[in-house]
Length: 198
Image (tube, rainbow, N blue to C red):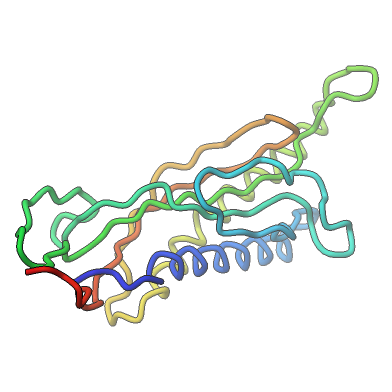
């Protein structure tokens, strides 16, 4: 069965909310850790690195940016998810794959230490503080996907997913952070379009 029009976007919104809540919990638990950035977005295409400073001011929450974007989608099936299903489908009727795999990227960006007005590099203490924040963000994002993705499906068995590689990104343009990949199964349950030629 095909995907319903909102399946993919609803998934990205759920992941965004889950990771944001986990980042806020980490800030409540670890002194000095900033919470969920004030700028949280589901974005189309690649993430623009343009909000690493404090765009909201200190009264509206931590600076930086949390984003979720779709990297790619492909047909799969229940027995071999997340492998690509390359089965030739029928040419006369609506025969979509039983499962669609969607790879998402979750990105958390924070301010990176930069040289001072005299051009001197950041101090080791500044670099260590930024590394600590980034490492806590990395673990928090990683853990949050395992904890909340199963509950993002109405199906009794929960949602299938595979947590992929995580990498630290930057520093570049005053930004440094974490990008985490995850591949999620989207089971089709919508009817085929009625205008389908047979």
